[in-house]
Length: 582
Image 1: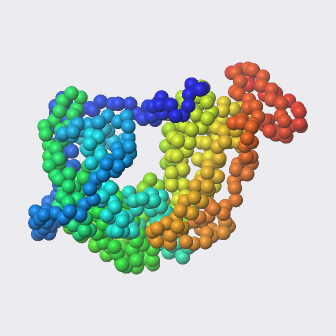
Image 2: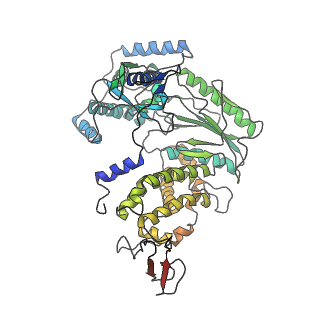
Image 3: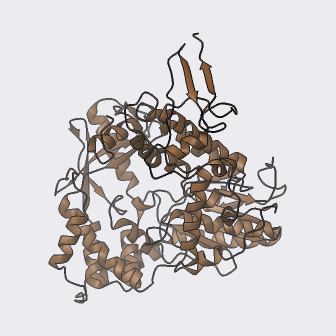
């Protein structure tokens, strides 16, 4: 174990097993009519019914005349002779795409999809909707999807047809950039003593209920080549599946709507389907990341709600027109307001209710948007608490590999920590790295404990020495470096929305209002200042005492004042630490 390299297959296979939960059989399921599905046949049919409902339009159309006119127009266009304006597939392109397909993956069947159910974390196990349908794609199907995606993306992005507010599944775009755009807008409102209201919409089964005729109509509107539209339409129509539970299969079912999740082509098709979303001219900002939709606006109290209500009504009509369903109960609205302390009220008194599709949107104190928990005061304490809990969970799961008793080398332990634990704590760190040091220190404590456990160091050894010997930067130092790279990219980003969001001078460090770019001018924390640069003599630059058994006297001779001791000592003196036997 000490000699194994991080590139070894078994190294990451064991890590994956420790991080994930084991397989749990599907229990008896509760049907919508409150009856119970007991045996394997009933369970397979019950989940197949749920998937069939999920991939179809449940509610009747809002505007039947509009639906009929769109379908008739699409049928008329598809019956015409397509133009030969589609680039042919070359041998070199096929060879490049074949190399891009992941190896060591089990191929699926070339015919009908065979679906299994994977339990969604946090959902009740006795409901059929709590299982995510998964099926294996054949290698030929993956290759075919990538060929279509290449041609569609060249047309949409080559001609700049995707709107600027859409950050999802676009090159050089990320969730952090969209969240930063919202945070900077709210922080600018704090600076001018204005309140900001943000509304987050939960689109129900977004990918699974895309209207096929409406998608073809919008592809024609974007002037996608006719032959490519016909191929995509044939790719989506007449799809069937069977659900497999243990050794039992359900009956054959038809998929009436939606684009296949997990497909390389589906995110691009959904972006094209929502590309004509209303872009409001009243100053209300729109933020899109695939199916995550948000509106936010900062102004005086009366002006905010007058403009927001009008924008929500316009957006609601567009949702109904194109058969997109929104779940009002899972949507949320937040009133951002600057306060040094945590506010007790969720919203101010006499705040009007916001509604979509005649249903009330609940006001909340915080909301998880694109992986970042935003609270109404932008303190990010709830986000730090959540990621700290997740980091402790993975630390406990990987304790056998990164703990004191592990036989792995320190380099491998450090690799596991950086890949599996630190990434959880520092996701989107440029957005919240300017939080108060007291809150961020809770994350640094997790790294300090890892360093001590990974090196099996004595309790009196300083954290700065452990970080130096592991060649591991402190979390504030790492976040500052990541933020600098992030803002350098944002300042030269092709989208003007992101460039405008970061085009400001950060307030001085003593100012009450802190903004994300403040992390670039903040002085280093105490642990970072104490940490010294490692030498080039090797991975360890000085002997590190290991934890001794109970009752054993440990002698450590210090080479400098306070280097290896729990208190300052004269040069050359010996410190005796006795651990009593309990």
